[in-house]
Length: 89
Image (cartoon, rainbow, N blue to C red; front, side):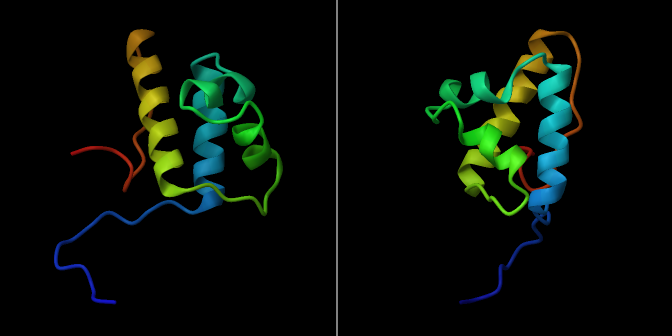
């Protein structure tokens, strides 16, 4: 495996993403059970990740959750703190 040639933002730890996700769900008034199906996930996928400290999710799933919650926040007239490594730009 070769090292990346460009500077890339570090990805959050599962614990840091779990905290951001919990906060973002509360601020956007979404439940862990309702957000998953919006992204083609099962109803329990996000809830299981939040409840089980040993659980992990794929990077693409984290990016999808980040983007969907950012969009919901924007529709609600506010912004969520972006996550380095998942935010565009």
